[in-house]
Image 1 (cartoon, rainbow, N blue to C red):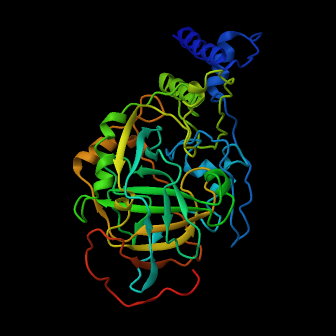
Image 2 (cartoon, helix red, strand yellow):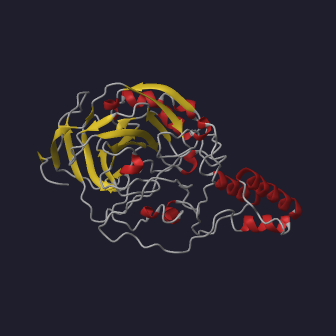
Length: 412
């Protein structure tokens, strides 16, 4: 039996060698080499060092360039507690001791600041596609010029990069990244934008306020349906499968296979994620299949194309948002983000939640909903959160805001 295991593991190692052109030293016994690689969890190494966080009150800024394999599994050596050690210093901004991390539990406020501007897009129709990148389902607009106006404390417009969805493990109480006064909802969407004077998210990611994320919370019991989100939800069943030749977790899938075959468990230590370096392909089409989170050129899994929607219908019907300064909620966790989190939820159906739960993960044999894609809530660290009421942008409203209001004419 032991010999069989050794031979099987050797086959996995040789497959990795052939696929990734890794030059293993095969002068060692095949069996011993395979066992040693499995024992030490090929191909990463352990990160036992303790990087220092950014000094209290300062922003940690990391550029979105290369991307690491990471997991939402709290028991994994590349789980949320280890993100800041993965490929250090690429993801050093993910240190939970930093001052501007997201998501957070938003403190309930009864004071509302009235904003003179509307938060709105100047487009009423856009076209895009839905993809499953193995971390979350993501809608990407086809146009490069879908601009959001009215962001507080900024005279710039912000270009919509993507709309993606977060949800928790099936059956867990927590299903959203942000909570409000400890209250949890049923799913959460992030509308990710970069400031229009930057070329892309990567450039904007090293500038405070370079990124704006609008968070929409969903409830099965509260709120009204959004026609725009329904257009996206209707295509979820078309992107259930995930299959990508060059995804960032190729080697991690080998480790997962070995661990499952031999019933191995991780020992709780953080590991470096190793991203395979594939040779450049002469085919531009193949290059475009790389499965990345933060580039609009990424191509992952199944696609649902020709989705038409009104981007203004993605925004909160009540136009009331909690505003704070924070970070991206996945690596690199750069603290360049202005957050606008909708106070009131949008309606979502059980059928949609079931479709989300069926989406395949980039880890072979897993669904996204097995571990969810929620980062643990982070410390508020003394930050102020303000409740803003924007002017209405034109589709049905729920009525007046409760509690005192005042003009929003002071800096955040």
